[in-house]
Length: 160
Image (cartoon, rainbow, N blue to C red; front, top):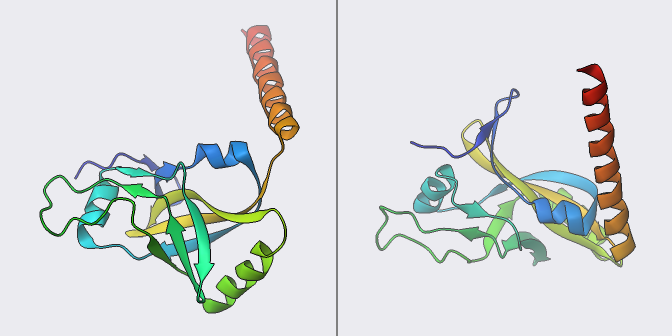
């Protein structure tokens, strides 16, 4: 088994992160959700063949689904491989889903998958309750990141 992932010290194995989400949105809150997958999909995720870049979540009939998440077909799978872009159900408590549904009804709020990781052998998705950024917010974030980078470089130069 070749897991293309990053092992963290708290027992979680991160498989994928959605870096674009942090650039496009302010993350107000985050929640952990399980995901309903088939066997070949889990094997493919363990190989690191998952992409969260353009994915989003919606709530329909009291259930939450993730759309736009790409899980590549398993190499050794056959007729059991599923559509890579199919909608997948997320597993959360009904009370949490209802709370999120009320939050999403507010203007500008959306649900975005932030990362996928294994927690004690089970795939979990970190779902963020997000608010969209304006262009000037994105520029401010980039400027802050560049300033921090310059400060770290100057400090490193000074210490060595």
